[in-house]
Every structure is written in C-alpha cells, then in structure tokens.
Image (cartoon, rainbow, N blue to C red):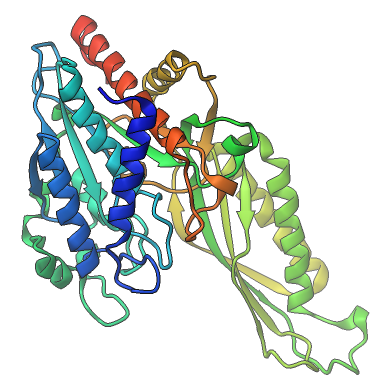
Length: 424
C-alpha cells in the first residue's frame, strides 16, 4: 500500500514518460492516431498489464484495461469506467488528460495491492481525439465507447488530406468494427474521471482537489455585421454605417451579459475577428467575429444567448447596419450525477479536505460518456490555472491525494452496490 505522496511521485514519473512521446521534437504535441499516439498507447497498455489488467485496443484506438470483480454482489458483471485522454493540443502540457489515465491505472493497481473487494469490475480507458486538433472532429474515441459516434466523422480529413478512417487503419484500429467499441447501458455502472482543473479557482482557495458539479454547456456563433464602406476623411461620424464600431458595442454587450451570469459561472469570449476591407483610410463595411459562451446550466446560457440576440439587433438598428448570427456548435451541459459527487465529497472528507464543488468550463470526454452512463469528475489544482501550455503543472502531493480520493470514492460505490444494489 502506497501513501498519497508515493502515489503522486509515481504519477509524476509516469507522466514524464508519456511526455516523451511527441510528434514534434521541440515540444509535446501528440495528435490522435499519430505515431506518437500509438507509442503512448503502447506504453499505457504496458502499465495496465503490469498493474494486473487484461488489456485490449478497441476499434477507435481506445486502450482498455480490465479488472475483474473481486466479490460477488448485486452489481453482477457491471463495470465502473475510469478514464481520460492521451492526445494533446499543439505545444501542450503533460497533465491534461494524461493524469486521468495514469490515476486510473494507479487506482486499479492499489485496489489489487490492498485487497479491496468490489462487487463490480473496473475498466480503465485511455481515449484519443478529446482535443479535436488533427481532424475536424472531437470526442470520436469516447463517443464510440458511449455508442453515440457520428458515422460521417470517419470521413473527416486532416490538413494533409488523410481520412480519419485511413489513419485509424494505420494505427491498428478498425473503422468497420465501430459498433463493437460501444458498451451497453446495462453493463456500465458509471464513468469517473480525474482531471486538472485548467483554471485558477482551487489554487486561489488553497485547495488540492474539488468535486465537479457539471461540465459546462457551450454555444459557438459566427456573427456577421454588415455596414457601408466610406472615406475615412469625408463621411461625418453621425452619418456612418460603421460595421466595426457596431461590433465593438456588441462585444461590450457580450461582456456585460456574461458578467451578469456569474452565479452560473458564465463566460463569453470573442476569439476571432476580421474586418473588411481592412484599409487604414476606409470605414469598415463588414466584420465577422466569433462568440463562445458557456455556463454551468443550459437555462442561463440559452437565456443569455436570447438577450444577446436582442441587444445585437437593437445595436444594429440604431447604427444602420445589419447583423446575422449563425450557430456552428452546440454542446449541452453535462451534469455530474449527485451520488458520484457525494462519493468524491466523502472521500475528500476522509482525507481531511473540505467539500468544494465547482463546474468545469472546459469540455471533457464526459460530454460523450453522459450518453451512456452517469458521470463523475474530480478536479486537481493546477499551478496558475494554466493549461494547454508547457507551463501546465500539478503538484505531486495534489495528484497523490486525487488518486487516494478516487480509491476511497470507489470503495464507497462498492459498499453501496454490495448493500443496496447499484444506483443508476
């Protein structure tokens, strides 16, 4: 039996090993179905075997390690799924996603070493395509596991024109066997994931871990504002139909609406903007900008979108421009099951830590897994709230506490399943 600190030290060593598998020698970049992804998958599979798990690779490239039930119970042959992803963004840090996979392996190893008896099995899953960087897809790997993969995603192509289905074949997967990757609802108990927070809240409050209440819903729009070009020196200010000035006012409205939604952890971002014709002495005739808006519940997010729609149109009317708002992405909020939150909160309490609950503003594989089963997540403090960056960092002791909390949460789920039947 290892202490939390020893578990954290081992986690850090494993993460350092995984960081060596990169498509780019200058930084950590490991894209879905790339040679580096394959090498990382093989290393993860090796760790799973060493931990005593039965290992396989499914049709979409998810590495699966299986631990059989160790005690009879009413959970029967059901599986508790634990996982995260091993693909990365470009020039990534070593903790995002990978910590969840490493934590799952260490938990399975400790459960065997401690002789913890569970009435259900455990499957540790190492997904790919959570980041959605190589192909114009996202969550392909976990969507296949959850049985909600969109078949046309297999035809997506990367910037080099390589189809996802062809890359999958080269990786060792099988696009024709996609249905075999899916679990049935009847065989799964729940899905748990440990992940760095990717934000500054836990660090600001001096807490190593926190219980996730939901994975924020997201809506993304392309907004086109059309006015009229004119000479920068001859058109009076009151007679202008300036698309950029109107867009600037709309962006202030976005900030205002998002700040008003702080009770629901609402955030809104304009990440891209282009003005035409783009000359220093011409009034902008057209502006296109993006809007990304997120919140911890669907109702407040949809209400904010309706508010912004009304404000945009009022601004456009007053300024003599037109506005078109086109949604190109929508992901509903994924709630974390209350009984799984309680299991993590109980584990934190057993470790002498407070019950801190917070929503995730970033997306995770849980978005897909929610189509299959209940989802629970545990956040780990990360330095400066930095993620998707080589400076990404989680402390050894924090990671060890997260692994220990995951073990204790699983023990509680085992007790619940053995005494009163599994909960759905």
